Length: 102
Image: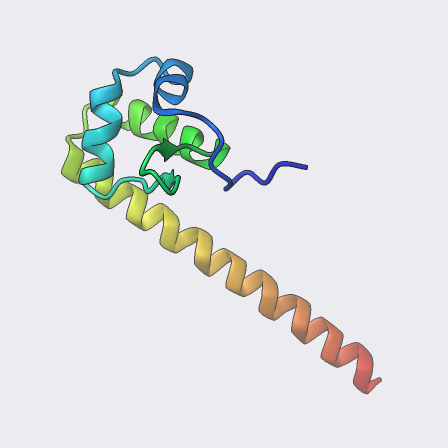
């Protein structure tokens, strides 16, 4: 079973999957928009999550955002996902505590 956050795709494959130039992927990494895994030799390996993020970057750029805007949108989306996860965890824990005390 492959985890969606485990790097498996070489940069050329990831770029091809999202119809981008390899150089763009390097720029996005330098700008902190994504962080692919690295092999011991330094080769970038992109995960399914990285590919999905590249698709999101592509879509935001197509909508007219510049890289600073893309970075801010991704940051806010990441924060929202964390908050949703935290609320779900707390809801689950709260439901468990109520059931245990009954």
